[in-house]
Length: 413
Ligand code: PLP
Image 1 (cartoon, rainbow, N blue to C red):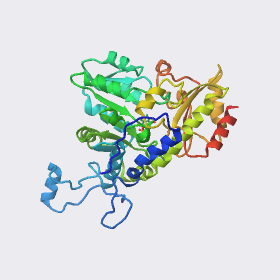
Image 2: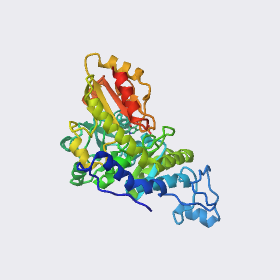
Image 3: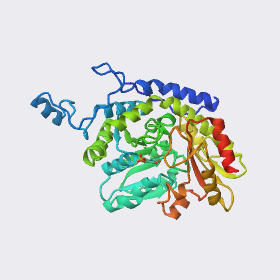
Image 4: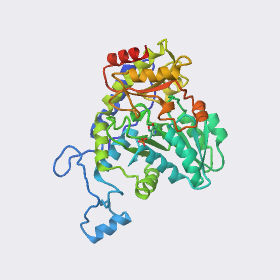
């Protein structure tokens, strides 16, 4: 199996474009070939195996498939060749033993928590995170007796929130939508001091495995929404968990087999197809994001731009130490008391970028989190997470850089 595991450091002595080119080069072969080999027909592409069940060659094989003595395919919710090919490719990119694809990013996140926690257990999570993940932890899991303390994302705050019942130190870095960077190594060091040792779980959706490989920093599991940069074309919903085989299998048993959060073979094929051009797409989108961030940072109508590439970003130094690249997402706050109205006007004036939720698409997507993606967060929680009413989030796509810049300049004026 092709496995990509590279020390994460953004080498400041290199031009960023060269750094991105090297990262793309490091993973390009795995993107194209990992998990793929011609089947009996010689077809180069992984077939889309649309079958609910698989025929057994003998009663003995059937029994052996159920006891685990052979790996014959059984039933689509338990495993599928197209899905397996995608999982192998993703595991290669994360540099780990195994990955399990799931129906969506939320299925992956719920599966991780539900496989590690029972009633009475506790999670520590950052305040700044995807709103639906926060809602899962804040509203849904307490009904099952699983509680969460939300903290500001610093290792000290995590340490203060830990209780004897803590089973997961949950991290989302960079965070949605404020691009906060959490020190994964420091959170792992905290976990290692505790008995029983909580799992360190990192939602790496914003970074994708192009820009960050949290398992190489010591995290136990990484979760992704593959709907985003991994699938990369805005045409599929999917999620994944990656890490050591025993942990991944435990989550797979819970969420895929047990709760039925299975990805369809068609969706898995679309994600794998997206991954073949992943290195090129991310190289380009990350380059655009860094240039756009610095362009917007000097715009008179903008109070602050959040992107880890900017020296003024509080997570800049940390990002340099734990990421391969700064990622393709940024957000910015408009200046002034009428920031909300101005933000809406800006969104409606964009012509090249698209006003839509989601991220990691070939299209540049812009959204107003406070009234859309993060509207389910209580107002105080939003304020504590740094999500102002004038914040706009931008996911850079693959359009012409100069046309995008002109689009933002025009919309902002
Ligand atoms: N994690 C993050 C950081 C996200 O932004 C999202 C969705 O936007 C998810 C998880 C959930 O992913 P999905 O929509 O595939 O369930």
